[in-house]
Image 1: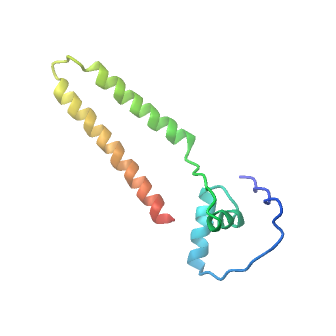
Image 2: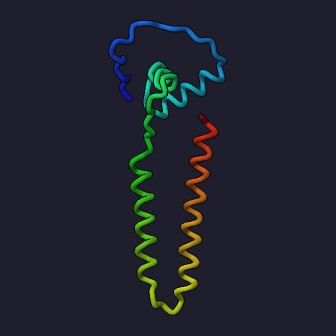
Image 3: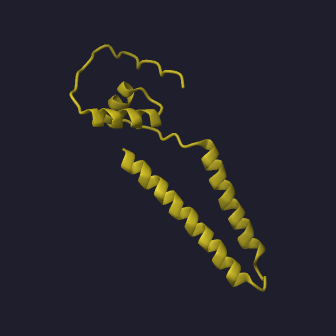
Length: 111
């Protein structure tokens, strides 16, 4: 990833003492946001927006799975085993939801 350009007009330095663990956490979060450490700390301290960079592949795959499930739900209407199939599809949706919650929780814990 190319290094982001310096924010315009940033010429003054400040020094802050933090622990190694805090520094590692900040570096990790800055990397996830695809920002330099300075830009990440600047945005956090000034309450500016930090955009999440979720993988486009992950979003596309999730969208695909949701679309497939919707399609399958429409196809089973009137099927002799509709109730059983609906239960299976709902359990798949629950599994997807559980996985997403786990990913979000893991992200929150790493912040």
